[in-house]
Image (cartoon, rainbow, N blue to C red; front, side, top):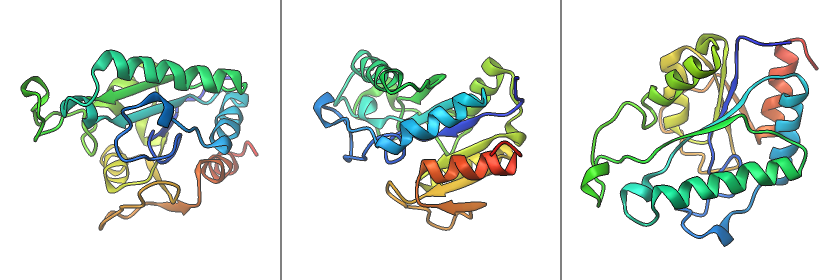
Length: 186
């Protein structure tokens, strides 16, 4: 069965512990329940897509090769746990970047919607039918801009400012269970 929606998941604070700015692979700690949550999405063939701002590249603390290797490691850890992340999209830009080539105001940095639109095109999904799970106002505002259902989780920064998520939960597993229930798949 193929769905017309996906679950978009922020990375730091949702998939893995938010250590500030991940720049050392030894600091990568996956939350155990996130693997279980993604397995539930996989069971129902719902795409699990990670969408993340990574200003560590723009600041020059890591390069894109290091970031891509880190994302391969995240995908491998999920695979070893029996779960599949369908794809990881990232924005390396920041308007105040140390590295000039990344110093841009772009459409892909959340709350911009460029990464979401690219994923929608790649996976042929309807953003208005999709879910955005995040721990910051950037995630929630991006989700609202595309008409998705937004779910705020408390495992990360919980910096929601004045954004108004549709749903608030403790973590990704609870979010996925609510999504499955809403979709009649629980």
